Length: 179
Image (cartoon, rainbow, N blue to C red; front, side, top):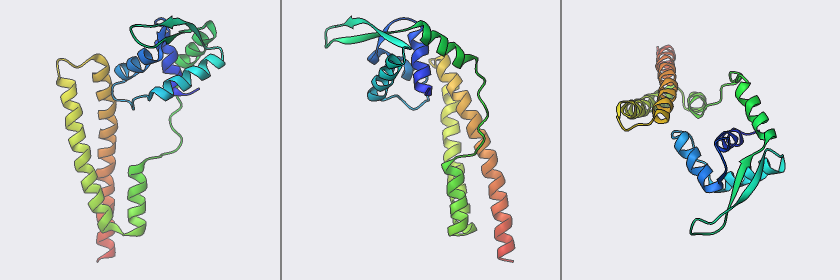
């Protein structure tokens, strides 16, 4: 089951909600994650309903069109509990646009362009790191914002360490080639 499906089940465990409320809650609770599209919410709800994990709980009309309320079923609660109890396996493969660009730049253009790309990327990462650090010191930031910023900062920090190491390796390669 997808991450979005599991998160929607978790949100529904708080009580019946319609798709618009679920999308808004998802975006608020996971503020640094890629927002869900409405189509993805309703498509996921359809699959969850088909699989017996949610069911329709009536209609709501709050001054607009009818909105279908969904509620989590016992099977949905069981599936959610199973997901929450499962430890995530660390990713077996490294998949990153950043890594791919550096490798391809080295293959295609050599160390000069790769070095320029690495320096520019390091600058972009540093700017983003500062932005996220300011989120953590903002008194109006929610706990979700701070936790998401911590997560992103840890990943950016790891990327910056990798960028620094790779820049050193590319500089060594450049020196060997041009000596």
